[in-house]
Image (cartoon, rainbow, N blue to C red; front, side, top):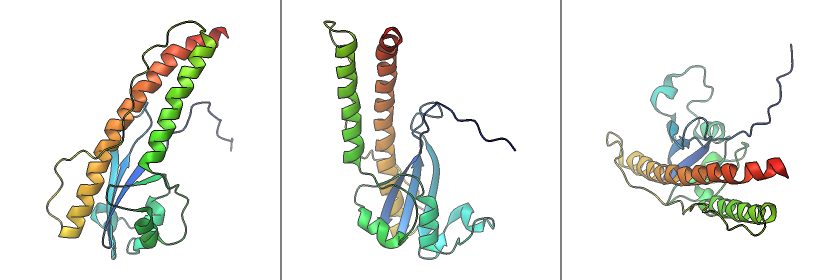
Length: 196
């Protein structure tokens, strides 16, 4: 059996947006890979004290479907962002110990994006001294975007789903801005790196 070949292409983990309302957790998976989608949703789960709901509740290949903490550990193996109104502490309390997912915040994501823009400016100044800086675009803040949420759930589920969806929509808008900057950065800097 041959070893998988390494790729120089970066790997983009999805971001899991997590909303907690009482003991009910709604999770929306938002893709971050610009070559796959532009910040689109690719999965959604509702997990309560009785475990996972929806089609996954019937999926016999998923172990521990009725165990809320086990499902949260399994689902939150990717970086996760609390929805507006949810804290990391609420998530950790329900998830318990375990899992490999990395906690993140909107502030941390925004800071890294700002640093990337500043780094691009510095690199352009270094590689093209004396030339005026190009327009790099703007990457704003991650802010919830309101929209419709399913209403066929109980109050806790509806509240959690709505919070997760609103934050996920805002994250999607922010990712589109960030990915637009990444394209500009590649277009402006890659030719300069080629002649360096």
